[in-house]
Picture 1 (cartoon, one colour):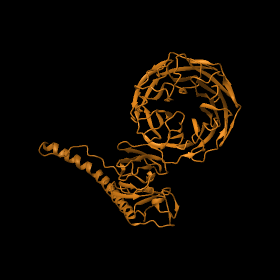
Picture 2 (cartoon, helix red, strand yellow; picture 1 turned 135 degrees about the horizontal axis):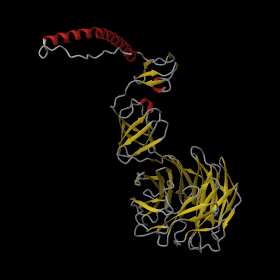
Picture 3 (cartoon, rainbow, N blue to C red; picture 1 turned 90 degrees about the horizontal axis):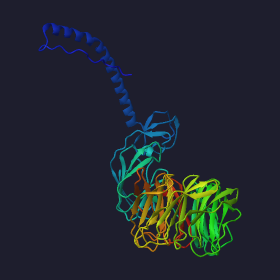
Picture 4 (cartoon, helix red, strand yellow; picture 1 turned 90 degrees about the vertical axis):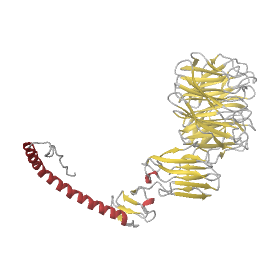
Length: 582
């Protein structure tokens, strides 16, 4: 501990304001206080001299001692790197042949890097920065789908704008953390700044400043899973790296299922049934079990089966006829909501019915046990609006059913599930159709954020392709409209078909085919705690050439930053791609 010098407590003698007696007493007191303080100050001076010698020695070591490959160092020793000439302190005892600037396990950077210098690069390959790279990066990529890789955050200073990136080229490129995770795209002419708020790991925690940073990564190549016309695509997440997809082989008319993997090759499609079908719904109960429901084309009978999953293998259980329907004409559609590991709610519509129906499906092993049919809502639905109804779970005893009414309005009804019996609660919320040309042939999407809030996304009209999002209060027995948000897209298309997935507690990933790029576009919608909705930038051409039609694109979240997106690609084949979201 450094010696402490005690402060003086009495005033100094003052010949102008003190009497002779007061001056003498003050002088005597001062002299008595000086002696111990001289002792304290002498000790402090000796300590400061020692500290100065230590600092001089350390400074000499920092400036003059180079790291030597193979030499044994003890923890705490400092050497400068002959590669970048920065100083590093040894973290562990031992020797090594890797330069300290590249060996962050054993060496810590001691030199504070300056926030200056500028680098200009023109490259046809990925560019990787280091801690000594210029803080202004002027980059022109000469090939598509290239990356700018940031250095390990452990080699950087925290808080300041570490890199300002200016894309002077004609290709956009993506920016990635150390280790490969995606941060954003930098489009031609765009300038973005990157700062790090946490440098405890190589990846770090980065903040991006600048205008319109696009945070949906589509640079990975889609995996083509078959060579047939694929329709009525549905997908559900099994785990953080695996999903299951159901679809119709349009050549044979029958249903298939396939395992989709993130980070490894997907499985081979397997036949689920022998009937010509349509209107597929699929829902995962666990990482090894899913249920698939569909309607027969010939008569609209609704059937389903349990799919047992082991690795990339799918074993369909015995097909179950859930409801027998006399006529194939009129409305039809299915939607599944998972209530528990053994129970689902199935909502459906079919020819001849005047309202939406529902059943509870109990799963025992590979067998479906269906409950009694009940009416989800007695409102008339639009017969032409098939197969567009959606049900989502809000816990084990509550769900929401959404469908288009007779005037194309959005009808919303909450459902209560007691054992094997579902029943509607409260009253229906009916939101008038947005826009001037309501479309029967347009899908919508529903995401239950929690038991209290649900977001419904549907198109404004058929001519301009805008989207409107409705935030619904679902905390009680009757849904209540809280707010709505217009999402201007303004591209002309005959239809706008939507698929969406909740990616975390407040974010929704939305995708739609036939967008700006005449392929699949996407965006992220954020719902704040004060019931406001914020729209991220649209990411274009996640998959090009997808026809704008119902059942041609589907998605589900694997975790908060990865979405499995499946589509009928430009060749009409089934394609899968894991979309990364920053």
